[in-house]
Every structure is written in structure tokens, then in C-alpha cells.
Length: 415
Image (cartoon, rainbow, N blue to C red):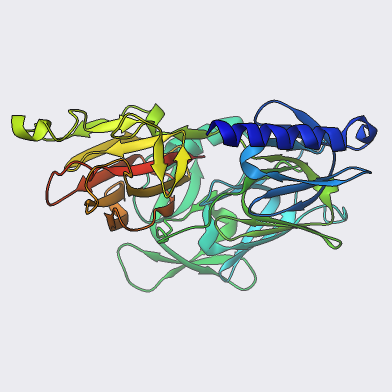
């Protein structure tokens, strides 16, 4: 680990030397995780990181070492007297628009800053990517009421209307919007022929989207000058502009990087499970088994041998090591959108045939369940936990042998 840090430090020093003071006229700034700042121009983004250029050289930087790319352009204030709607995606992305309409199975929007502006983004928002669509999101009191309303929702779609006393809703299934965007085809819980409800009378729509089996990993959070925040799975910079693909699957296209404010790689809204205090369910071990097993039902940021967590010869500074027959319940409060970890059997265990089953549940719904074996390679896991209140990790094993603890390296939830 010390060698890796020295290598990273050497790379950053070299980057600083190459980018140096000759690039001060360029607008883009990169802040690394060690606090160093680089000046230059962002020329490429991929799954590994970015390529940053000066007049002298192009320098690749790993995504793990980037905290922030700042383009030096602040988010614009909302035009005076303007109102806006907000579409929130299942990955936590938020889109500010002047208006929206559901046409067929996609949302069609009008830009907040006017269609005449060439820099306004073009949005492609399939209905299946949307968590909610709220009108008058500019009103602080209405936003608070909307948040309270969401806390009472069940597991069905909602057609929301506004009353003097607050929001009320009908539960059912949004099938699609009409071709002209005037109505929404809404099947009520009571059954019967679907109703055609006017979109103009709705204060918003909420969708109970099915949990996907897997989702792309988050690359970074993109903040543009129009007030949109995108949880990006990919960012492509080409001569024709910038294309951001969100984790949920929506696409946002910009004419150039001039429409971008920041790329947040630190994403300031990440919580490692090893830093949280879960509710623990674990059996009391008999005296003879305690000789083979640590007394703790789980270990934080360390392995069975009290060393750094290690899977597939890769060392991880954060993570959990969970004993068999243990259930850990984490209260997320609906504040996070994605769970990520690398799972496997602790390499430091004494038994080469160790195996255990890990099940991950979100509010009672199984998102992931697999038997892990010491001989198998560790598996990256990325799951959607948008709106989830309780996340449960369940570890089971046929025999409580030393070494069949499940390791969840860098287990974390992200907003």
C-alpha cells in the first residue's frame, strides 16, 4: 500500500511539473485527493479517469486520485420570476426544466433557459429512468410538502395533485402518456379500464420502478451551469460536444464543455458501511467455536488476521468482514441511490475451502444473493438503493469454519 501511494505521489508530481505555471491562462482546474491542484484543459474522460492537457503535454490521471474537475463556471441563477419543474431519476440525478410532458414512454422537456440558447442541453429521458417529476420545484414550501408526501408512498406509481392542505395522490400504474402529452394512461389499484388523467391537473408523478439486477458503476457527478446534477456512468467529449449517460440510462447532450460547471469525483455524499453503526443479529458462539472464530460478528476495515482487507491480491483501506449467521441492518433513511462493494471470502483465512452465502436486501427485497468460495475471484457488486430505508447484509454458511467470513471491500452507499 505504501508503494502504491508513493507511485501515485510520483505521478502527481510529474503531472504538476508538466502542467506547471505555463497553463495558468487555461480555465480548467483539477483538485486531487491529496489536495494538489493542476491547471490545464480537460480533453477526455473514461472509466479509468481523465486526460488533462497543457500546452506541453497530455497527462492521464486515475479517477481514484481525482477529487474535483472545476471548469470555473458557476451554476446560473434561475431567471427572475421564472418557475421550474424538476425531474429526479432513479440514480439521484436531478434535471431542472421549464416544462415537461410524458409522451408515450418518454419525457419531453422545455429548457429552463430558453430553447434559443445553443448551450441548453438536449435531454433524452425514458420513463423507466424516472423516480419522480415535480412541478413548481422552485417553491421551497412545496418542496418540503413534496418530500413529506414521498415518505408516505407505497409501492405503486402515484398521480399527484395539489390541495390547499397539501399533496394528495392516486395509486396505480402509469402506463404511458398520450402522443400529444395531454393525458396519462393510469391504471388504478382497483382495476378496470385505465383512466386518461390530464397531465395539466397533476402536480407531479412518482414511479415505483422495479429494482434492476445490476446497474453501471458511477463514474462521477456532473454539475452543469443550468443547475442540473447528473450521476454519470459515462462522459464522452468529442468535437461535436459532450454526451453524459446517467447510471439510470438517461442521456444529456451539450454543445461543448462550456455548459459544464464541475465533475465531482469525490461526490461528497458517500458513506462507507464500516463507518456506520448497524443493527446486529448474531448467535452466541459455543465455547469450542470461539477458539476458531473471533468473538466479533463483523470487523471494520480489517481482516481476520487483523491486517488490511485483501481480495485477489488487491488491498482495500475500507470494508467489512462479516461472520457466518450474521445479519447487519443499516438505516439509510431513503437518502442514498447506489450501493457498491467488491465481495469475496477473506484471503487471510486458514481454510482454503471456505465458502459462505451473502444476501443483500433493500427494504425486504432481495437485490443480490450468491454463494462465495475462497477459490473464486472477488465479484464487484453495484446495486440501486434509491429511496431504500433499510439495507440488510445476511451471511450464511453450513459450517462455522475459520475463514468463511465474507469480505465486502469498500462497501459504501452513495447519494
